[in-house]
Image (cartoon, rainbow, N blue to C red; front, side, top):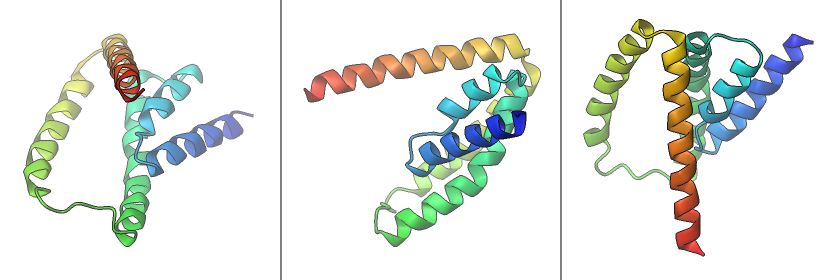
Length: 120
């Protein structure tokens, strides 16, 4: 039974990731509900992100949906901060990671709610 639950988590996370919405916002909490430790769930999300993002990138590029101007201004800081955050995530206890991720999701939901109200 757990195989099917993990498979469903991957399908849902992959669908969101393919749409550019960040599959980890769903994948990590679902894995936590299935009893996976926070650090492991975040690692699984990073591994799942690689093929998902490669496929999404090629599809968006084929459809002409990529803006290439200024791209390199994002790459270097993203790589540096990703490496630093990974080192920090390994050093932090799972409880702290869970709380930080939960706080991030709460902040993101408030932001999205505010953006949605402005559109209406």
